[in-house]
Image (cartoon, rainbow, N blue to C red; front, top):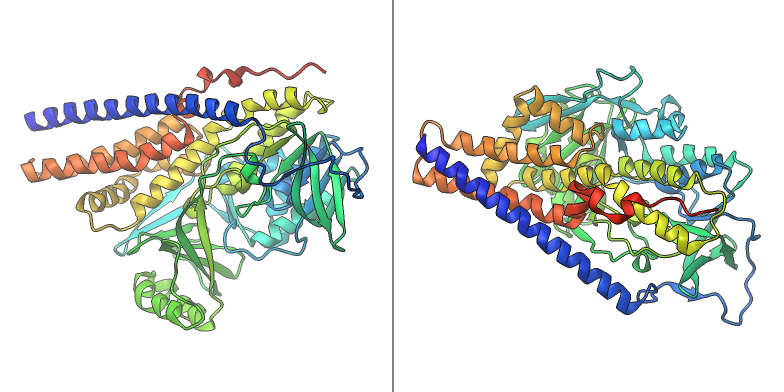
Length: 530
């Protein structure tokens, strides 16, 4: 018993020291960024901006546009419809208006569905696209499983997660956008942000016929996705590529737990199953790193049969092998990028162009839709967007106000991915075991984390406490039946490993923004005078 008190004191002191060290480092880093920004000016490196007065003539959209939106994916289409409903004159430019075919962006958490309702777009994710309700997750490890249900008791029966074909969902929203007379939806490729004296005035793009065009507006919102070529001058991107997803579609099979996502804590990394229609189940196999076995020469099929198939639940194995044999195997690089904006008059970033996290938890669309609701509410009092510097200063509050939702989902996604991957390190193995057993306890131990994951409880401090509760639970397991020097050392390494997972993610999100947002001056920005 004395050992436990001593260990507890040491661990608390260690965590406190690390936490305050990170706060100090973060504050110093923020000061450095301000100095760097002042020294280089608002223009950044000039990678994609282009002065509008260059002596050449280009056709342009009429100057009656309030907002130019680059991209009509989930974020762009939802934003265009939202601002159009608010009475804004919107010009949306999308590279390809045909139905997208992606293997991610197929699961919307309940918190995201609530935001979809706020935007008036909930009918885009219903039976018209064969969307399926999702009520929680089933977690598998070593053939053991536990069911984690969303805390939906206080909501109507329609409130749940939704899973669907990504392309069908996007096309439905584009159809809604096309019904608004004050919104122009055009196919074209945006190549450049037009800048004049440090202010973005609009975009240069090529229309469907290949003709070079210009579109001007007081506000340009870039939502051109994870492969954005416009983000460099609107943020300081630090893109990480932790893994790849290998995608399959299983046909005519039933999941062991109906209307639930299934997460297998596989070796070496997680495997996901969830319904995307009434007859199809999406399978995503995570492969760590940036390279995957070749699909063309059959190495991928061999990997799926020999490494992945033995870990698939028996109820899904036959359909899984049939999908591998069919050969329609897709791959996609997973990306993670914290939001590091460079406030720029006349422009703002949104969606995956601005902020990404590992798609393991399916939180990307929830973050994007939450951002859109927030941006709509910030812009609502403004009838005139023409004062770009004042608008830019006002919208700096957006980056702080979005943090409860975005930082909770981002941090959870990054932390869970690292915990769920297998590791030769015994301390990491213990953390993985502890996480599964902690979630299996039920009550607040499962209710708390799943409410965070679902977007229904966007509180970073709750995430922090649950994460270290898992670590402490893991240490407690090691101390039974009695502590030994070896177990004490392993427990210490477990806590240190947990700190090494979550603290860098928190630092990337911003300690002050996550836990002390009221200390950020922009938190109190008032709308500019009209």
